[in-house]
Length: 168
Image 1 (tube, rainbow, N blue to C red):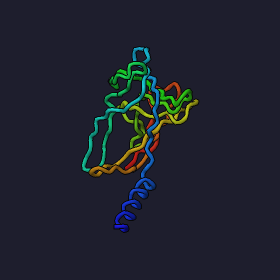
Image 2: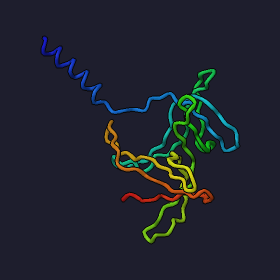
Image 3: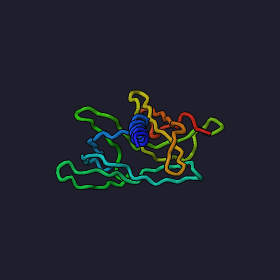
Image 4: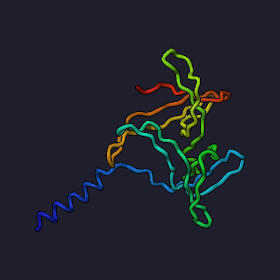
């Protein structure tokens, strides 16, 4: 009996010790809308529409954002087509910024692709050239694994960003 109790307590302790880090901060999000208005609330989640082939996620488009009103605590949903930029606050500090950007890729001939894709990406560095980025995961069953990161470069005056390196 003591062995079973010892083993079960060790499993509980080790599961907490080896658990992966999850970002569970209570962010206040300020949504800048396409019409120029702003909406503020407690950020809850992104609602995504995923396209996958086998276990590899081909695209993971943000369809909407969920937030709770700061006063009424009522859950609301914003369509991603209506949102231009999200600023996440951790207290009074800006924790991260996510923007809707137009993206082009570099083709095999080192030319810019004709088609433009619209994506929400995190602003990593701001300046004369902005650096945006996101992580891509592969999911198998209930487990997801990091596969690579996408980085996008954008000059301030350009209407689109360029995917710096296209993964194979």
